[in-house]
Each structure stands twice: as structure tokens, then as C-alpha cells.
Image (cartoon, rainbow, N blue to C red; front, side):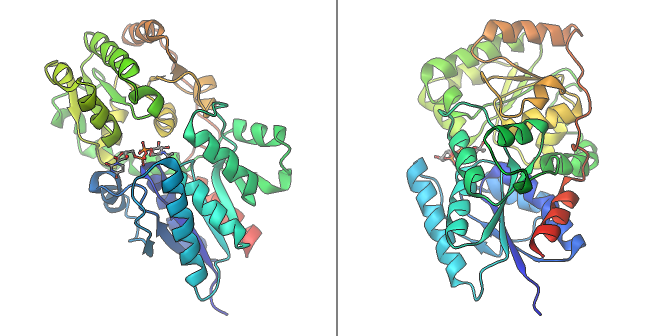
Length: 369
Ligand code: UD1
């Protein structure tokens, strides 16, 4: 009998570090043959290739090359292209594994379930309760139709139970993003990244911003730039800008102002290890990313999240994260707490132990073999 195939979907930057440990664990577990599909939602070398190279992810078996577009257009392109690929296979795969909450996650889930293919969603049950956030819609749709819901923190299980999901569909596996942090940390540290940027260890802030709610209006983005200028008085800032953010900085006429501040360093998007090396040695991190809230909690680095809500509440209750929301005065006072040594230190989080991918592989073998 030929080995059954399980398809792993990767579309955008935050997916790649979750897929890497799963492909290794699937190989070690041995029940299934893994097939990797890259939708092409992210396509620049700095947003995609660098992660495949550094994380040792095999070349995708298929690349759907969908590219950017409006939400409707991008989702539709992924849905159509993934369906077309699935039906062109000699036999349908045993299952499809999707991760996270990007448009590719939702689109591939819809294509697969409509063909009767089982879908496992890794990072299921997370909810920001903010439907203005495109990812929240992707999470709700994906979880409502996927067969197997694999959760990363207690809130995921709680949300799914409250939504009436049959507990037989849900398994807690822990956090795959942390598998990759744990695996790559020694290599990232060995690169001495802060020194390469002329930064003193534990005496700089790392900043990332890319959510539409933060970067898509001139008013909000200029307020955030003003906030960064104020915090830069306390610690120099390194800010690797997502392509979306850089485009808005230029469009809203903020580039000169940022570049003329010697304590703010705007860079291109970083590779995985450079980013991890900078994060692991930062004094604190300012972000609107979901993954970075998790990574900083694991690393014990203070994190101020420039959003009013989080779908990852365990990072606030047990980790090192605090939500700043629109209250930038609160943000500034928290920065002072951090630099003056009054900020919380956080606790280890259950299932964030570098072994989540092994648990995913075991659940898939149990459910799908
Ligand atoms: C997407 C995800 C978001 C995730 C983020 C991480 C959705 C709804 N959003 O948002 O959840 O946190 O990725 O990065 O799926 N662009 C490039 N090069 C690329 C990709 C994009 O230049 O390789 C530019 C394009 O001009 C594009 C813009 O960035 O219009 C935004 O990209 P898009 O994929 O639409 O959304 P992200 O903001 O990256």
C-alpha cells in the first residue's frame, strides 16, 4: 500500500516558522508522506525565501503564485488555485493542515472541506473578538469548518467550548512558533546581531508594526511615529519595516522625519535569525504582531502591544505582554516601568516547550491513519 499524503499549507511569513517543525516531526513520526503547498501570498525574497533557507524548509512541492490583492481577490485566487491543484492529484490527500489566520489559511480550508478532505487547523480557537480585523474573520471561518482543531493556549479551548464545538474535534498541542524559537535560538544568538547593528545588549527597543489599523491611516501612523520618537529618548529603536508599513510611511510623508532621527533605525524586513537575535537581546519590544507577543513571552522580554486587544491572552496573563491600545501615554509610562526595572517578568506557559510539532504529528497519526 502506498503511504497516504498529508498536505501542509504555507502562505505568508508567519506560517513558515510553524510549518518547519511540523515537517520535521512528520518525517520522524513516519505515518504519512508530507506535501508542502506554498500559496504565494507572500512572495518577496525577504518575506518568504529567506525563511525557507534559514529554517531548512524543503522547497514547496507546489507553488500557487497567487500574489497580493484585495482580501476578496486574494482569498478567491488561493481558493480556486488550491482546489484546482487538489482535484488534479491522482488521489485526494488524507488531510490538509493549515496554520494561523491568514487569507491562505481560510481559503485552503474552504477548498479542501468542500472536496470532502479533512482539515486540521493548528492555532485554533484564538479570538480577538474584533471583527474589523481580517484575521478574526479567517479564524472564525476556518474553525467552523475544519475537522480537527489543534489549540496553542487555554483561551483557544475555552473559546471553542463556548462556541459549542464538539470536544472530540479539539486537542491542545501547544505552540509551534515556540518550537522554532527554541530550535533556532542558539544559532540566532551566535550571530551577535545587536552588535552588528551597533546596539548595546539589553539597551535598545525592537519595533514591528504592520496591522492595517495601525499603519493604514496617516493619523494613527503619525501618532505612533511620535510615540517612537518619545521612547527613543529612553532607548534607541530598531524598526524592521514590513513592505506594507514602509509604503505607508513614504505615502504619509513620515520617512524623512524618521530617517533624520539618529536614535531610530528603519531597516528592511529581517530574516528569521536576525530578527530572533535582536528580539532575544532587546530591552523591550513594541509590536502589533501576534507571533511576537508569543515569542517575547517565551524569551522573557517585555512586550508592549500596540493594539486594543489580543487573540493570545495567555501572553498577558502569564507572559510578558501588556496591551497598550490607543493609550500611548500608558505605553510611555510602561516603557518607563521597563527601563526603571518595575515591569513584570512572566512565567513559563504550558505546552510552549519546543515539542508542539511532535504532538501534532501524534494526533494526526491517531486521527487520520
Ligand atoms: C498578512 C496577513 C497577516 C500577517 C501578515 C504578516 C492576512 C489577512 N494578513 O498581512 O495576518 O500578520 O501577513 O506579514 O492574511 N507585499 C510585498 N511583498 C510580499 C507580500 C506583500 O511587498 O511578499 C506588500 C504588497 O504590496 C501587499 C502588502 O505588502 O499589498 C500587504 O500584504 P498582504 O499579504 O496583503 O497583507 P499583510 O499586511 O502582509
